[in-house]
Image (cartoon, rainbow, N blue to C red; front, side):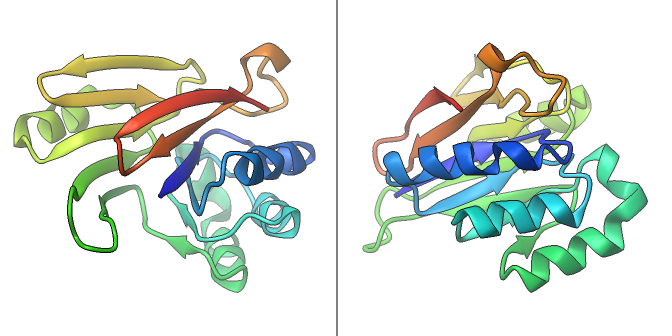
Length: 173
């Protein structure tokens, strides 16, 4: 299965169609938004653009409109999982399954604790608007970057994770 990861859209509804194009071209079956969605307008734009099977993490900028945002996520048929979530990826035969930890922020203590647990192959987050990939032991820690209007166009990327072969790539939108 291929999963698209994004973060820090900050209500940049204009980019939803570009995200959907990558979603379709790469054969993604689900997406995970690592927070700072900001309002239901962004959720609706992603749904209207054709994205499906979405999971949303709460970002720091989502707090002021949290109830409205949760309602929009629910109405769109997506899932809201709060500030942090363990997500299990498995194939149809329950082989090669693995856990990923998804959060919004780059809180060093939370990430360090997740790494120390030894449970996660990947940790995904956003918040700083700067794409970054590093490894600690068997865990790969990935900052998705940002898709906000303030993000330079040449830095606007999503991540595609192939959960079967456990490989990922960044794709410009």
